[in-house]
Amino acid sequence: MAAAILAANPHNTQPWLFHVAADRIEVFADSTRVMPAVDPFDREHHVGLGCALENLTLGLTARGFSTSVTLLPTPGDQTHLATVSFVSAEPIVSPLYDAIGNRHSNRGPYQAGGIAQSILDDLPGSTADLPGVSIRWFTSSSERAALSSVMLAATEAFIADQGQSEEAFSWFRNNRDDIDEHRDGPTLDAQGMAPLKLALAKILPATSRVAGDRYWLEQTRNVHTATAAVYGIVTVTDTADVATRLNAGRLLQRIHLVSRV
Image (cartoon, rainbow, N blue to C red; front, side, top):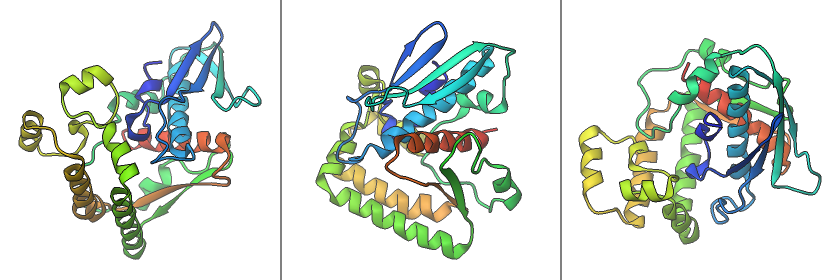
């Protein structure tokens, strides 16, 4: 369970509930942890739950269990997303499992230099156990420029929409008291600030929503898109299919973990 809740998830909403039995773990979507303005079709919600599902299976395997995953096991119940059955087996501790504790969000600049194609080739792509999903890499300067433009425009549209902006800001945890009370949401520590700037931000009055949006737009323009050496997009055969969304999350989590190995 500790491995599962360290998974990537949208806005650190931690949108999961688990029921643990002697031979299985049931995975449920927590309907109180959705973002209807930002994610009206629950796409990101389900992808985040898929990430947790991937970590859960890695954790069980490392603890000496063989797993079997059944998606959407209860017809008509869209909150019961998976049953992970398990039986005793020899422990298998993979490098991906070892990387779970090191994976975290960091919105600072990327390291200088390109990424060799051989590294991208070694990253997980479409896999037999995750039907309906694959990843496409964009490495050329023209592709990166086009996607950077799209991301910048999307950020501008997001912060111009008051409903989305307010909902996103409501999850931000600005100080230790906020973190201790909620134990969720994005924090200052994940914003990629230099150490001195981060220390000052923690003792100064909380930023406003408008100032936070402006900082995000500036970072998107001058840091994230300006330093990205490659883009990857997880593609799916059916964006509305919940099982496919869960598989997309599992693939995304694998890529996160491989990048930390």
